[in-house]
Length: 91
Image (cartoon, rainbow, N blue to C red; front, side):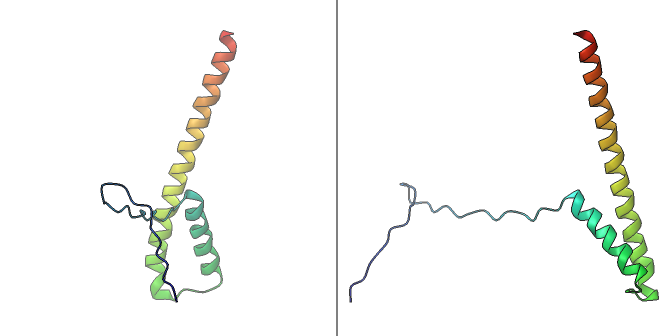
């Protein structure tokens, strides 16, 4: 039997580059899905009475955050529309 050796690509200075793990991405769409999951689970009776307070608190925080994100996005859209209309008027 013959042994085969393979040489991995390493920088000339002898250092080894390790791939960096990507942090998990959590998007606003994911948070909206979580809010929907809580709504559906609650309507189907998936939570015990004692759990409802803490689940409600998390839901309220999540809902407040998402409403703030939506308001900011709407504000930016309005600002962009205004800037676009102004630039068209100047032409």
